[in-house]
Image (cartoon, rainbow, N blue to C red; front, side, top):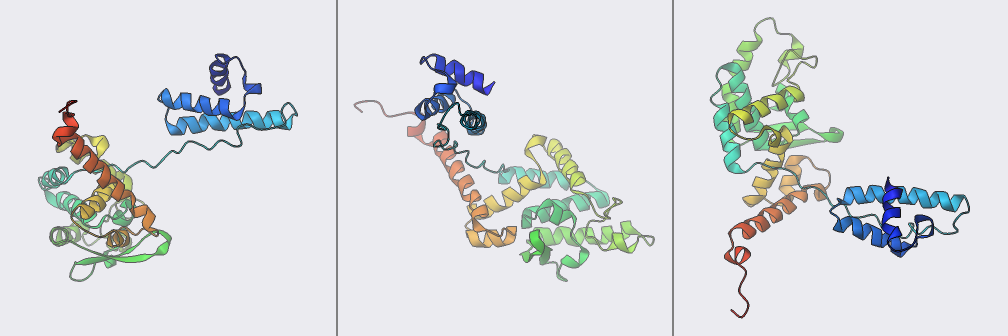
Length: 281
């Protein structure tokens, strides 16, 4: 299909894929961009063409490879999805409407995730020993076995203080040592709440709060944590340390989120963005 599409484009110029030069291939890729194809799709098309011309070269049909001097389309990096602060507050308000131990656990999970930006696997797999005695910080073991200390906000500390007695009572005297060691124990094979189950809980909570379920996931709350910190003046290095990123370039994606939000804000609310100045004005 890719070669047929190229052949159709080149036919208009009176040539064919076997005889095309590098400029003809560049013109074709530009044609794809103008036609609305994504950089990822254009890169895949180019990959097909490269295999074709390598074959022609290997078979002696051509002595050159016109695709070898063409760079792949820049695909960029997709920006993380986030929730705004009002939406986060709506989730938390809805969580507080849930009663019993499961309600207290849900509040603690969300407050903890939004206060720390933990990866979901780090959150659900927290041992009870990770929590400091005064419940003001966590000792988290992240990717590569790297440990980091993450401070807790007052709301997160308060939610944990309310949850822990209910957790202990729910375990009962028959709880095994495996269940007792986790901050969020469950009957799963691992002994603690699974990431899949927590994801389901979040999506159900989003529906109850009037937010599209597909927009909400544990990772979206992690993104929101980082973005909102930067919005309120946190420095990038501190955010990197709390997220557990080995390289600060990974954390820098959140500065691009800020830039896109500011751009959107200007486009929506600046008078000149909506009403271009009249000629001669």
